[in-house]
Image (cartoon, rainbow, N blue to C red; front, side, top):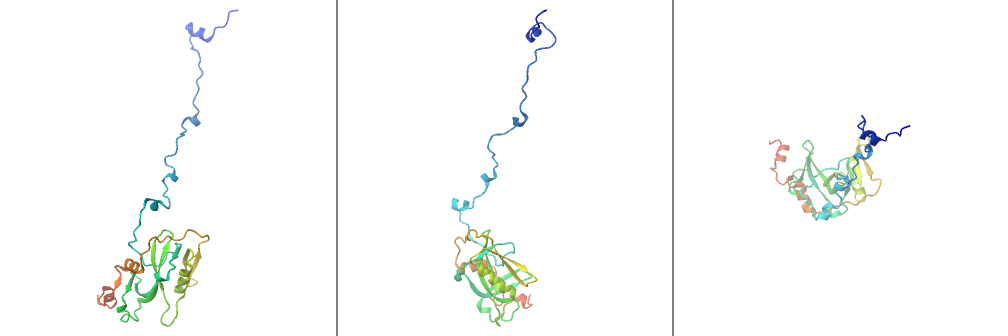
Length: 222
């Protein structure tokens, strides 16, 4: 019996089939696996809360809106009584505009439906927006509507807690919600004096003369 030919012998003698070599296929699971760090890791790009402070950035306070807090906001009110003032304002609800009235015109505007006494108190929401909240004060007869009374109560709570107010039409007053957990205190920054706060809030909304366009419009002159 003849000795079987090896694969090399077959290939060397010119037979039809070449030697079979084992081909190792790449593992499809690991073939395209990228072991390098993710360059788009969101934590890498997230701005930290102290970012501006670290860079020495100072945010300028140039505008202070005069408004009540949004029902979506948690907010705080400034607890220093030196930052509060009781005064008279003129409110045009259809135009969503509020004007500060010069004391020289108070007597002239007694009985004007658009004028009322208000407590102006600085407030701040969690996004750092500072605003001036004009809360209606009791009238000459000492009476105060339930909306204004509940707003005043909310402002007192907000001096120590983050609160949110939501109108309750069935109750005829605001529901006051206190944040369930105590969070960071409000960051007022370098809050300017009350004088400067009033200037920023009413720089284009001061009625200081009897011929002011708003008063002329209310008298039907324009």
